[in-house]
Figure 1: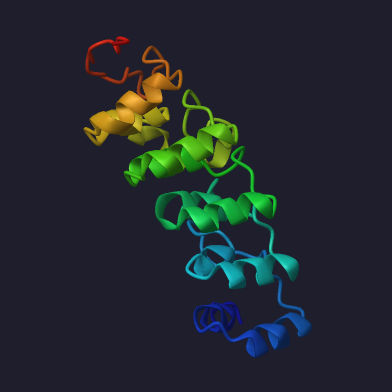
Figure 2 (figure 1 turned 180 degrees about the horizontal axis):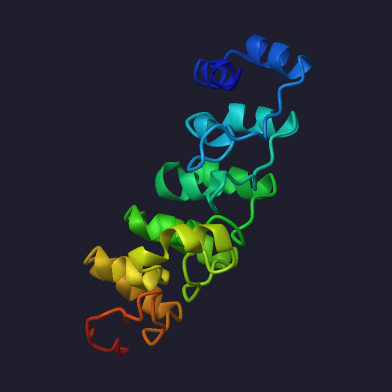
Length: 188
């Protein structure tokens, strides 16, 4: 039944979605360990995002790992959809959205939006989700700054440092982010 719901979402079939919900389908049940329940499949359509939340979808629902609809949106959705998720109750406290945005090389305004909503540039990836840490710590779980450095993304590295990122936090392998030494900004 799960894939029927996914198909209905991808086809924006409100009639089929209504029938599945009337039949007792749980919009917050996940079908894959590494993909949150169905809301991420709607990120292309703000109206469908709103409709699903109004019909019971949890904007903070996780899969087995700490991945939420906002995690996926932070990496790929429009700013409009990210703002809509916040309006509908999404939280930066789950799903590592800042890490996801940095990994996806998102625009500065998206990264700054996440920080303004409380995402910490110093949070270690999955730091409060033991199942995720156990699964992924061998990969070197670090801060968003670690992500920017790994991506060789000077722009986001600089932005994170300007927002208080601490270059002295070690990842799960004990490594520090090898930040570049940027010239100080000076007033003209």
